[in-house]
Image (cartoon, rainbow, N blue to C red; front, side):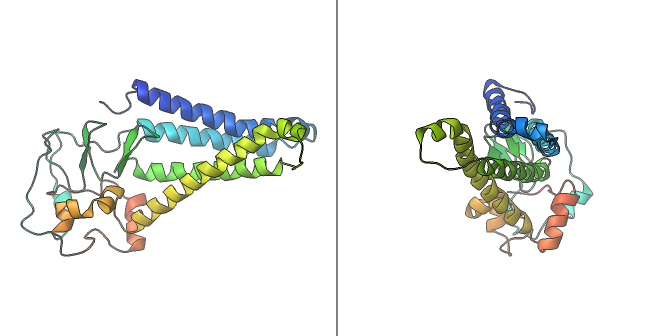
Length: 251
């Protein structure tokens, strides 16, 4: 399928994300807006809504953009050739059995997207798109902003809870209580995901390479454990500040 095409599954996932973000987080501030508005304290809710809007926009940007699909018309460049790490001569050039395109190093065919993706990391079901060379940095930015939104929302939910042992209290605070529990779960997931990605980025490896190391020929036959690792600082710099880091290579 073409990137950005909103199939039935993608449409429902993106709609669910937007609805959940809006209802869960905005509801927390609407729960206390009346009292704060009377005091003129509307700056925090306004900033939170702006941050939430930024999170939703980043989500759609990452979800709908080209993650780095390999095109049949793309040609090898001299710049790409110079970036090939030292690998065994037994590694042969290959064409994708599905796309019939010559795969760059670190590219992988995604069965769901029906494309080979440069510097393939994983296919994320939550964004209904692959995470690859072009959208991986923005994916990290999205996770970071989402984490801030969740932490802020969790603080609001917790500060609004005044525990009492009565059914009446539970009835009046059920929304805050459920919201807080959901936010805790989402925060843990996003935090662990962000930490794992930052660790892999600092090593200049991908989720696919980390999980399938012994099945990837250019890693299996490499003289180095990780032929792409150039040190933490340079790895981070190349990931966030450089573009088109992959090279045409065998697999």
